[in-house]
Image (cartoon, rainbow, N blue to C red; front, side, top):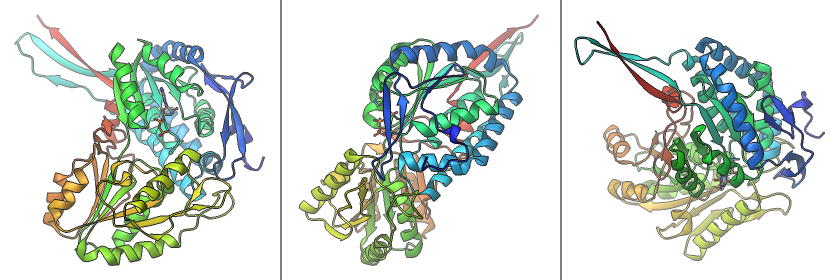
Length: 484
Ligand code: ADP
């Protein structure tokens, strides 16, 4: 095919349940390349019945997997990591084809995705317990950590590989088994990862992947008492609904939901660094990440210079099909996303915002939108209130530090925030005042497997990555030993 994969067998259209590939001979979901509108594959469309079969498999595989030595699980995760690295080119091509991001970014995502397997494999060996001095002379207290059990994972389309390994790596390291539903828009990366997981030695039933009727699959898993944990990345609306459903059997929940990140540039910022950071924080993945800067708050004294510099850089971004040549930006994921971005820009302009560059759709093939810079944003515009998830840098002018912090916190979201300043005291004041789970100071490159990723307020619950990421998949057990 035009994907030119070195390993064509990485392109799968079946569900992966209990170590078997269930062929796409019944109902299917079409997977489309957003850059061209072409259909890449027809993936088997699963529903409640298949979801229950996957849970059966994960439940049956649990006793064997959890009792393995951590070192064995670590070795398998390490092999899976090595295979991902070895097949970076193919995985990146599949990812760009189904998701649209530039090929260089797709390779970056594969490296990032693989890093979670390496990290959590290493952490598997360090799931330590505790001893606590007894409350009586004849008591000994031991605290152990054990896997929560079968985990249901539901992932989005914006990072089709990394959102999977960030969850599955941690779950498998902890000794849990997994049923996973990737986004229907980007199932190919997930299925390719399953091929490599199998090669790495992940036993049948330990990881099961299917996609299709999302509500039917989600309902089946949420109703099933054998599923002890839900880990979800996606929209706030769906996250709230799933959290409510998980309460029926009191599952543990990790939620990584929408952000509305402020990006604050103070007068004392390094202007070049702030412009570089804004490009990364805003235009990476065509603005479609939950940590993307959604509101650029820029202080009076630096506002015009920053706006000009940023607009000049943004006007030079190369937009196109990531498989056709080097690009800086790809298409939006689908027509709905394109309409939302255009709607936000049109709403802002109709309420007085100024377009410095961009502000329109590009071409009529695919779902490309021009990288855009707007100034003159106000609090009431849709683009200020909602997450845009597109390539639009929206600049708000502010005067005082207190005003910037108040504007930044004026949102129900609390995932990532960024601030550029060279004043150490301001760094301390502002970073402590921001109600966000992650704060980048003088940098926009915050995502890494070694640090805890996650949000406050309506951006979610729990953390992924770092040693805290494994805790999400472990229960504490307290053993009280009476002695003679
Ligand atoms: P996004 O805006 O990123 O598409 P969604 O929350 O719609 O966010 O999607 C994230 C994931 O949640 C996807 O895998 C999607 O299929 C899944 N999803 C959407 N609705 C439901 C639902 N009712 N039950 C279970 N999963 C769902």
